Image (cartoon, rainbow, N blue to C red; front, side):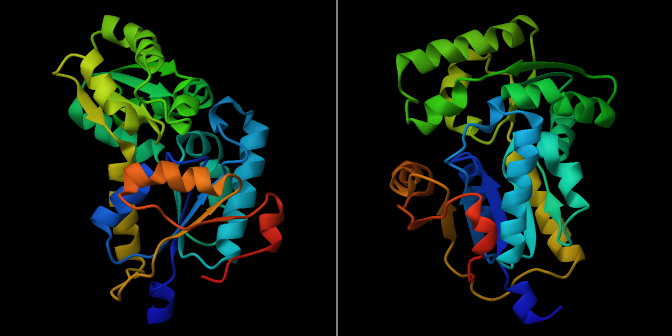
Length: 275
């Protein structure tokens, strides 16, 4: 593989800032890789969208990422991974990786009574349930759809008492089932960890699929001889709306305020970036 190909960026996308939890893992595990991050902030949250809408959005975004010259795509959105991954993998010529299977495999290694908190669309798809039971048919799985979490996080209301009340309401069925493991079925949810740890028994294991998705990405890059050994380029951030708000929210999670470009959708298909 040529050096030029290895130096291409990894494309990563989410509906908003949730995918930054995956980006942080990329920085930690694959520090030499250059990244193009797309946040579809004009159309969030994805978790209350129809399957048809999600498929349309994902097809647009991956098409644009591919035209922009990325070497791999990480779907840093569980809703997209649950509803669209298998359909888009066959359409494009580069590796496209999702969160569900890596997260499910990690969950069954840590517990037998597994709770999944997710967006309504991810929960309704049963993608985590199927993947967890496929990995180990002897475990038990409970899922809870959490429609208010993403809007609260995107509005930076993590310290609002209402957010604590909502979290308590969502977790109650899982506490009653005495879960021993909790899976973040949405990349936004690690931001809620301080609240979730207060509400759940200390013995509960927390599984962040982002960690395991990036492990899979690292293996895939190695197998395909696509690792970058040169100095990475600065991460490029693009959103479909509200770039300043995205930059402000990103500061507390990344430790810096990124420069964020806005591109309208679906016009992005006609405007690949020079990356």
